[in-house]
Image 1: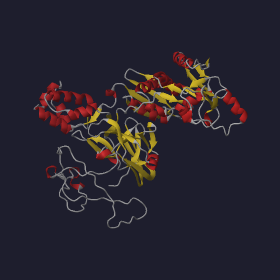
Image 2: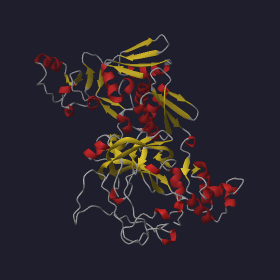
Image 3: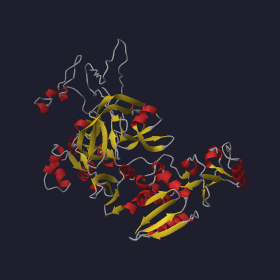
Length: 557
């Protein structure tokens, strides 16, 4: 099977020991082969966590398609790249992107919390300054300093004040109790700032309602109360503040500090490019929640069952969608053009507190439900009565696959009913309690891009996890390795395809493929074979496709 996957600039959400959780373009990941873990779902339990990346794959050039989901999530992939859904038995199955329209596919319901959360901001590492603008002070000495490029008069000035330019210090020798200030400023800050919910809220409010110039940060809103909260927070650092009010009634609070401006820009950017801080994914949950509250308070709208963020920044809409997943909200993102002279873009991101308003449908596990009811000895009429339904047809329609999806509420009612009558409902528990949601694919469209593609293998210790999270807003993606079904008997067909422009020479004895064996913990419930009419059972040698024998083409298989 030839692997095919994502273009170089498609983003992945990964964890690395150096930076924790963050976004990476797959082309960079394949080139550098970092020690990284993919955010993936476990096909057995549907729980979302991180798994080791076991291989980095470069593929031939192929046409790129754009897959769009009902929630606004998008990902660019090759046509034969897989996304995930559930089969009639409630088991994880794959569907090719080109065939995925109207399928309900897996997206994250939650994201893993940070490992070893960052509880302090080290300003030395955050600012990483290579100019002389920032000065380090320490009464016991600032550590090792390279004075080679500092004029002698300036050296004496710094040394007389127990200080040095940040750019000249050896960072590992600067003491923990050092203070920092911007050149010619009286405002000093400790080297480390605690990462608290108040800081998180402030940064969220800044992203929504603020901007930063070289020597000041400005926050504005018609309501003065949140600005008072900001002012109280800065008072603890003796930061100069200035108040003003515009002609249209907007209160403005100006933080008059070049150092604070540098910090805010390093964390969240400035102007129209402000975004969720890269470091936020590694902060404690309560700080992440506070950032979200500040963001919504500043530039959102709150309703009884959902919050909505409005932004003209596409990347912020993307990160906000991931943010919603991190906090367990069901999220969706919509794009439109504003009706103004500039025809500017606007994204709205909805965060649903009530999951039943978004992500409430699950691919119908019709065969599993039928098997569970049979295990209990209940008839369809018995089940309908137990659920308060007026007719058994409501049960029949689900079990016979009349509906492609079923509501979570209905699935939970059936689960409770069958559990009460002694059935093993553990797989329904997996589906209902999973960290994944299901989102309908609304379109799969070819782009004009034909280029080299890249893929990851996620198969730690032989476990076929084989999925990772990527794309705008987050979609679970698979590479395209094939599996031999349990119960198959016959010769395996090796499929090779040269998608390049030059011939490839194959010589006797050349290693061109691999077989990976996975031991099952029990016999397969539905083994491949004659009882299922499996059309390739007992094949000898390479076989032409027998797809015309399938029922949809008039056959019997």
